[in-house]
Image 1: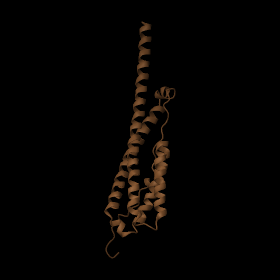
Image 2: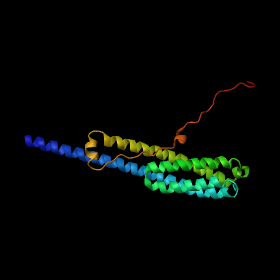
Image 3: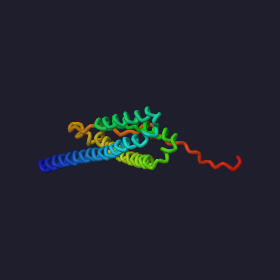
Image 4: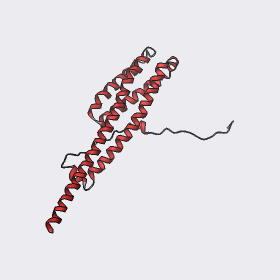
Length: 191
């Protein structure tokens, strides 16, 4: 009788360990899939930028430093993508700042603001930025779930020895996380 109880306990422990291991593998694969989605959106963004630079280059003859910063930031973002989420997020933040500078300068050129090609590229970049944001949210939620799993009992007993390590979040640059202040107060006419 004792042998049967011992066998049942050992089998239950083995089944439990297998279930925990499979759950950790599924969470890790979910992170990899989410990271791949971010990379697709970042690649789309990076592919749109040369078209935008070429579209505005003829109009912005005196703004070459802005175009150079955008081009350099794009090149750095492309190379940082292979280095992981933390490095990619930092490089993408610099690229975002460079694009903001470019769009601010575009505002000074009425012909450029009315150019359909430039408007279309700006719209595509805006759409891509939204998709990156959604992908980042999904990725970070997956990382949080995984990191919690490998740090809690009983998964921690299996995660460490089997090489499950903490994953980095894909952090947005602080400026992108700030909510702009909007004055919604109604002012009386003549006040």
